[in-house]
Every structure is written in C-alpha cells, then in structure tokens.
Length: 127
Image 1: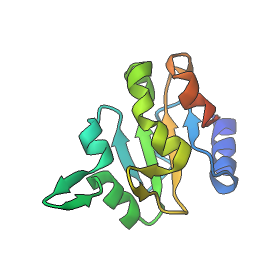
Image 2 (image 1 turned 90 degrees about the vertical axis):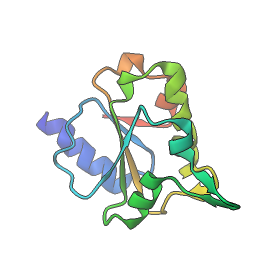
Image 3 (image 1 turned 135 degrees about the horizontal axis):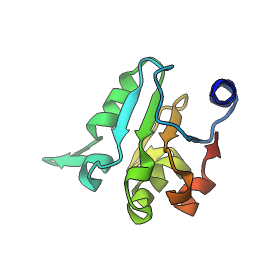
C-alpha cells in the first residue's frame, strides 16, 4: 500500500489524466470535493433556474476548494452503463458548458477494476 501511495502522489503532481485508485482510502487528502457515483444526471450536469443555466452544487464546491481535487467515489458500485455518465468529466474535464478549473485533479476510487467500463478506464491512469 505504501508503494501505491507513492505512485499516487507522483501521479497527482505530474499527471493531468484522471487517476483510478484501486482503493477507497482517500484519507491522505484534505479539502476535496466528493462526487457520489449515485448522483442523478440532473445533479451531475447542472440545471435551469428561470432562464439561467447554473452549474451543479458539486461543481461550485470544486471551484471554491483550495486543492481543486474531485473524488468520484466507489465507481465499482454502479453498472458499466451508468459509469458512462462520467465520461464528459473524465475526457473533457468539463460538465455541460462548465469547464473544470484548469488546476483540478480527478481521482476515482474502485476496489474492483474488472467492473469498470473500458471507455472509462481508457481516460484514466490506474494505480
């Protein structure tokens, strides 16, 4: 586990790709934004308020956080089909019309990599 943590630290410092960490332990981080995998599409992408299209709450938390670290927690808890709702975030680092902050890092947890969709995996560094 110690070796994984070293690799994770190095990847976070040097990599712009999302990181899939084969553990659910992110206690080494502070000041992060959790995006639960069970989030609905509406809560994932934003919403209209009158004529204004507003970003989702998690996006606002990420933009206001010090570390700009987005953790998509327990990806293996949802089906491969449902995992695809995160592809826009992973591939383009944006949600709807809202780009993620330039310095943001995406961290995905999963205890079982074999149940992760192949397209989702293709956008990640696996540690």
